[in-house]
Figure 1: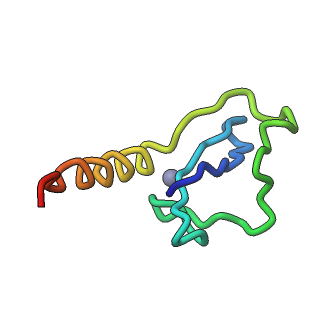
Figure 2 (figure 1 turned 60 degrees about the vertical axis):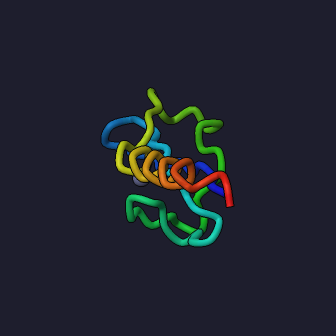
Length: 75
Ligand SMILES: [Zn+2]
């Protein structure tokens, strides 16, 4: 399973959403290290002007899903 974690990028005034695997919670799929004190929903603070998704995480999820779908259905 995966969950989304937001990284606040003050220089860009933006939130970047990363994908974190439940098995490796220390880091996102792109290698971004999630700060332990990172709030689960910093968007609530209203500091970010825009939100976007981390493209590296998105492609990592895409390939993981593709691998899953390519698994033979019949045994
Ligand atoms: Zn990422």
